[in-house]
Length: 164
Length: 134
Image (tube, rainbow over all chains, first blue to last red; front, side, top):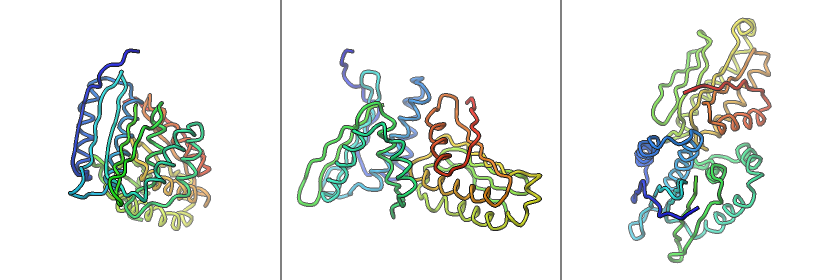
C-alpha cells in the first residue's frame, strides 16, 4: 500500500466545551456521511471522536500560558485518523501511560475488562466513567498511539492518535 | 404512577415509561451534557416502579412490561446508567412481573448488538435482539 499525504478533514484548536463537542460532531457528520463509508466504521469513528472530545472537555487543564487543546480528523491511506492534544497534570501521566500500554497489549481481553470496569467503577465527579479509552481501543484495529511530554513541574502535553 | 416522558434532543434520547399504555421505550442518541442530571429521574422512576409493580401482578400478567431499547449511540458515561437501568428491570422481573427487554440495533451495527449481549450477560437477563433497517 502506498503512503499518501494525509488529507485534513477537520481541525479545531480552542477550549472544548459541551457546545464545541456538539458542533465538532455535527461537522464530522457533515464531512464523513457523504463519503458513504460502512455504517459500522462511521459509528466507530463517531464513538471514538465523542470519547476523545469528552476526555478533553472533562480532564484538560485550561491555562492561558499553555497551548489550547487541538482536535484533528484526517484521512490517511483510506483510514480515518483522529489526533488530539491537551494539557494534563504531570501527576496523572504515569497512570495514563500504563493504562494505554495495557489496553494496547490486551485486545482479546477488552470485552471482559470493559464489563468488569462498567460493573465496578463509579462515575467521577465530572461524570466520566473512566471507560473512554477502552471504547477507543475497541473501535480501532490498531494500537492507540500517544506521547506525553513534560512542560514544567506541574504540567505535561498529552497527544493521542487513533486510526479507524 | 405518573408516566415519565422525556423529549429527544441531539444529545439525549426520548424516554417513555407509561404503565397505562404499556409503553416503555428509550430511543435515540445518549451523550448528555450532565449524565447524572439526565439519568437520575429515570433511575428514580424505575425504583418507584420496583416498589409499586408487585402490588399489581395481575395487571401485568395481561400487560407484559416490554422495555424497548432503541439506542443509535450511547457514550461510556451513559453505559454506566444503562447498566443501572437494566439491573432495576431485572429486579422488576424477579418480583414476578411479566417483563422483557427488546434490544434494537441497526443493520450493520454489530457493535450495538455486541454491547447488548455484554449487558445481557452482566445483568443475567436474556434480551430479545431486533435488527432494524435505517
